[in-house]
Length: 85
Image (cartoon, rainbow, N blue to C red; front, side, top):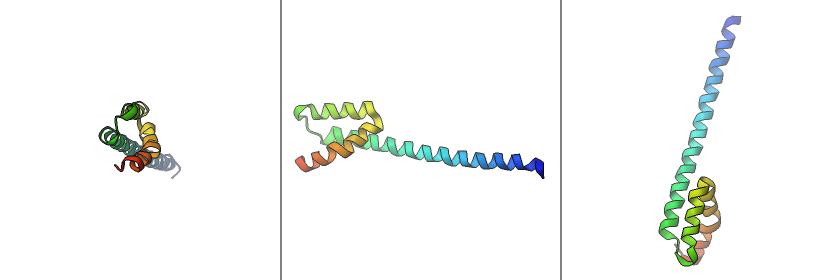
């Protein structure tokens, strides 16, 4: 019985590892989806006035998920309030 304990522990560790990797993969997929969504929204709905579109596209492209999150939190509500789109 003593020899079976390391095998059981290894199986439990493998299960935890798989769940952790699946969680990380889901977060990465969600971040990628947010990045694509904000990039498309910026390219199609942002005005060219004052180079807003170019600046925000560069922020989103170079900062990836963080840039998309910044656009979602900072610029998108302001754009909707000002332009209604």
